[in-house]
Amino acid sequence: MNIEQIYKLYSQSYLVDTDTRNIRKGSLFFALKGENFNGNKFAKDALKNGASYAIIDEEQFQTSNKFILVSNVLETLQKLANFHRNQLKIPIISLTGSNGKTTTKELINAVLSKKYKTVATKGNLNNHIGVPLTLLSMNLSTEIGIVEMGANHLKEIELLSSIAEPNFGYITNFGKAHLEGFGGVEGVIKGKSEMYNFLRKTNGKAFINSDDELQLKQSEGIESIKFNSEDIEFLEVNPFVKIQYKNQTIQSQLIGSYNFNNIAAAITIGNYFNVSLEAIKKAIENYIPTNNRSQIIEKNSNQILLDAYNANPSSMKVALENFNQLNSGSKIVFLGDMFELGETSIHEHLKIAELASSFNFNKVYLIGKAFSTTNVKNAFIYNSFESFKNSTDCKTISNSTILIKGSRGMALERILELF
Image (cartoon, rainbow, N blue to C red; front, side):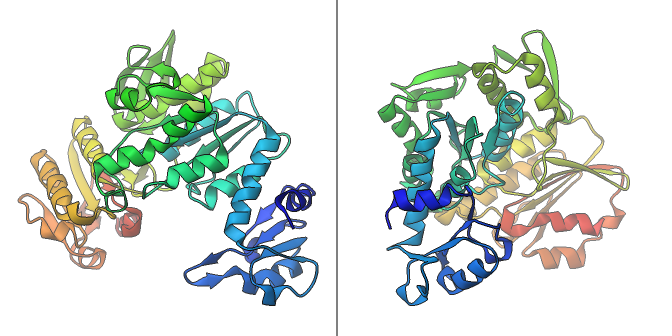
């Protein structure tokens, strides 16, 4: 069965599922494989739970005409998503970057949804599976699609761009993220710029922060819509970012000056798509981050800045610098290991540890195997979360402003339970 035929089946419901625990009636089930699972084995359950057909790639599981045998389920999912994208004929905005892409995606969606029926990547489902699923979650009523693209090695953004075929693109920044997979910062720049390569080849457009000279250089030859700190003025952050745009002051609920560019990008994109200034202001002011991303939590007498979803040297640096600038009394920092740094890990953790200890914070806690190699002064260092938990009494901390930041694998949100 070819893609056109599979598409006819998909278009009966515009529903695709990959998990038998959450099957929607009439959906197409794609029996994906992973290191520790084989979706083909669950295809029968998917049909039993309400799926209309199951796409499989192992002949032994094809026991009726409800099982559609293909050579590769993942590749079929990706081809179907690309075919569907071209039937929709709507603007697709893609974005990537080392830091801030999920928050920026959420802000763009908040702004554009004030005027259009939008569909955006859910959470951080931004890889070779998540991007196709995002595209296939769009239907004939969708007016604009917003697709986040993540990558930890070269050629990944190239693949995702070929699937989503974006008309517009935005790269938040080039930073020290996934250095192990990319082979260093130059690899990060090359890998993320694969989006620019696609836009250049297809005559797409890019939204560019013209204060970032590297973005200007990498996007040469692409029609661009630019913004900078003169057009959109940063006013203050204490702890929330406040900006001035045209005749409006916009008070966000996002902490950290590093979120200024994320907000500015959303404003620029909203303005390009003719969303009113009043609607843009309302969307940004009403957006509240979730999922351990730049959240402010009041607990007992403490104000906690929880940013424990992800971390890399670039985001750690700006988070610490921003925290240092806040006007508050007692400041306490909890930092967890940064992952996927490869051979640079020891060096990058030492730089962050030294930066944290150089500020006049009341206490600095460094948690994880990588941070345990740093041996800096003015810091409490633990080689694991368990050793930290067993030797630190957080209940004694009061009337303080607290920063919690680390990679997802560290799960530092567990610290909240200790207060």
